[in-house]
Image (cartoon, rainbow, N blue to C red):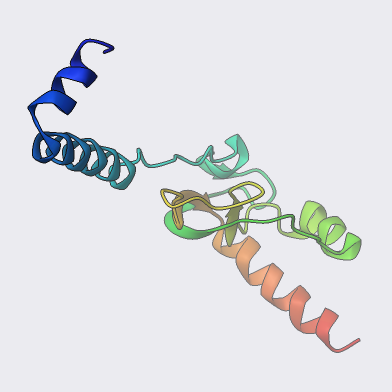
Length: 126
């Protein structure tokens, strides 16, 4: 590299400018082609049957949420007991990056989802 740089300077400023432009454009295109990040869907969200309701689960897309989620203790207790396989979302980590996915595929239980909606309706009345 030490021998190339003085050679470019001797040849002329036009060549140096061309080398700089090609280098910068290569770096920019590399940034735009970032590999997509994948989400590790929990094992519980990939099982075929709902152990609570003893029925087959459906497959569907759900939102991937990012950030430090603060979830009410009451909700977590109710989820574990009454609707563990509702899967309306999947946690994606602390922060999203340009290649972060917005959707993930899970297996969810229709009965769990109905139970969650019923619980939310009752909880919101309090």
